[in-house]
Image (tube, rainbow, N blue to C red; front, top):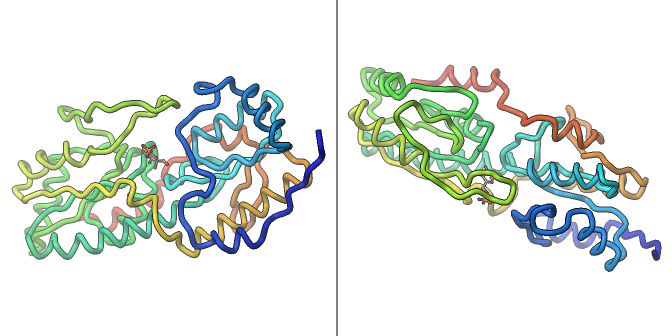
Length: 297
Ligand code: F6P
């Protein structure tokens, strides 16, 4: 095979620095489900004279990258998901942008909740981990935050909202992560599954709202932020993190490294084994949740 080294195209990177999304496109397609795994990818690489693959994504994507790597494909992973739930890195890129979008939305919703004496239930993404809910809720002073890691009771939540009322606060903001556990008696809407077997989430707030309204006596409205959180202009933090990850991944590729993911540890970008990144889901730090709880009610 012809030996081609692709230098980092600074001009292209300059031009996309402020853009969200991807210029390559993306899919929920698993190479082992929708193709012949390593065989299909190797053929594409041969055709296009590609020697190494940089895989950018979250849990499912990195799991496929690990499997391909174990089968001999030279792979470097880059942790990209708004969910911030990848192990072995302190932060994934996309997370801080989603938090900013959700925080801005909650700030706006607080105005209308207060004007109309309502409870507004704001549903954010977060399948297994409540990072977005906790960060955006904390940043906007939410009155309760429901995350996948912590079970809750609707009656207790309603009491908390009424205690606020007793203090003259006739409105509340409750942030709920899409993957929060539903209390007994309430059922998650039935949804489809994607190629990785992940349930298509969204809509938990609509199930919870009537129960909150009944038990608290407050008119309870729902806003599901959905894919709004995954679009638009990235924050400066995410631009810098993504660029640092990208440069590190390119350097590792040129050095012939493989089977690793670039990670942020403290202030440093370091390679970590893909196995470590895929070993577990990185759940919300309980300390962050405790700080947010200080402002509940
Ligand atoms: O990237 C992870 C995530 O944002 C989850 O929080 C969410 O459940 C999922 O993606 C939605 O993915 P899709 O748009 O493919 O349904």
